[in-house]
Length: 99
Figure 1 (tube, rainbow, N blue to C red):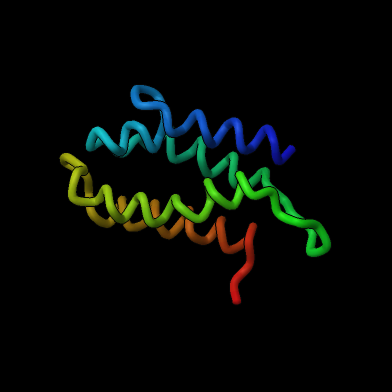
Figure 2: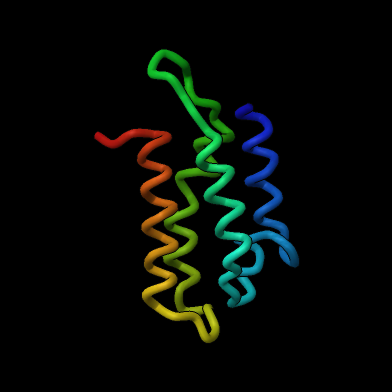
């Protein structure tokens, strides 16, 4: 399950088709956001297991990357963008927890 989620998230970084790849080009893709949220919803970790390093590497970077891309986005509703960041951050908190 985790390996599949990692692979799916890595595809979202592809330049021409992935949610994050398109964001680098200034586009916020609603279908891509839905895909990412679905992937994140499928990740479940119990308290006793170690977290896969590659998974953490991908997950922690997402909100930071999105904030960095904000100035690149073309014709995107700011409220829609902020909502996307919030949705993803909430999913990450569910997966990784908060201090």
